[in-house]
Amino acid sequence: MTVTADTPQQIAADEPTASRRFLDRVLKLRALAVLAVLLVMLAATQIYNSEFLSQQGVKDLLLNATILVLVAVGQAMVVITRNVDLSVGSVLGISAFAAGTYLHGGGNPLLAVLIAVGLGVLFGLLNGLLVSLGQVPALVVTLGTLYIIRGIDSIWVGSRQITANDLPASFVDFGHDGLSVIPYLALLTLAVLVAAGYYLRSYRGGRDLYALGSSPEAARLAGVPVRKRILTAYVACGALAGLAGALYLARFGNVDSGTGNGYELTVVSAVVVGGVAFTGGSGTVYGAALGALLLTSINSVLPSIGVSSVWVLAIDGVLLLLAIAVDRIVALRVAGVLRKRAAQMRSAHHA
Image 1 (cartoon, rainbow, N blue to C red):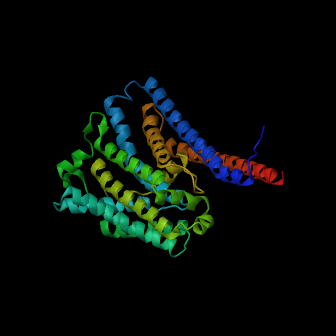
Image 2 (tube, helix red, strand yellow):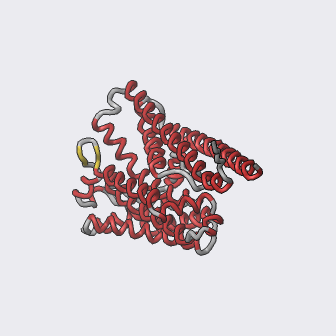
Image 3 (cartoon, rainbow, N blue to C red):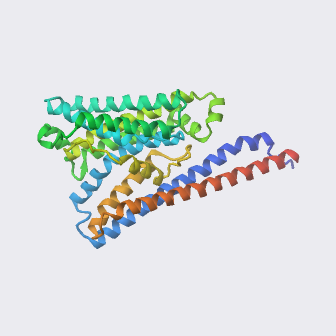
């Protein structure tokens, strides 16, 4: 009988596959844990308040989540590359007002949405160029553009306000209507979510974002066009923030200079809670969407059980800290697996 031992080359080839499989299992478990928490929370609230999951209640839950999910999808793409975009709240606000101003003048709703998306692309392009070409830290760049955009918005908007009475009835109706309990906004958001998830998983450009987040230097040596990929992530994030601004206008029918203030922190929380590691290289847009749905559901659950909404921020903070702690534990566990595989490879080499 002949026994063939694995060669060091075979073990080395199997190492990335084994590590990726392990990480995929961890990410799936993380997403399932968030989903389980969400379902338990909703079920417990329904037991306490039988009207919570009524037809209108479910519709409101989905409507409340759509805007945050859209922005979280774009933010997830940026965070996967080991960067961040803190300007998304400001982009949402100024895009919503731009769309509202155009519609107030009797414009076409579809063109208004395109204007909002185009404005988001412009700011995303600015962020991406500064981060990728200028080599300026993303935190500094997007914090600066946050204040710049907010300042432009405040000067432009001033004390003016766009209300539902200033908008076409069809546009406002689109923000509330749907198919049974499923709002049109939720269907649109789902389409964007699936498209983004498919791109990240099936296209080289999407996979490059993960490689870049895992190790920028290794990605560069492997031939990944680093600057182009970072630019792509920021443009996508800006475009989705602009789209979210237009949908915010349709959903609430009210925009002023304060729209979007502080929204970026909620978005980052949703992304991290949903399993996208802040250190980059792991996570999915589906996890980010679950995180967004969890946070927005908490906003609805607390009033339904008679708890002051003041606790929402505190709970969001606790969830964020727990998510960061879990990410740290997972990172240490993955590092342990990699060290073990490396030791096995060295042993096989010496044998």
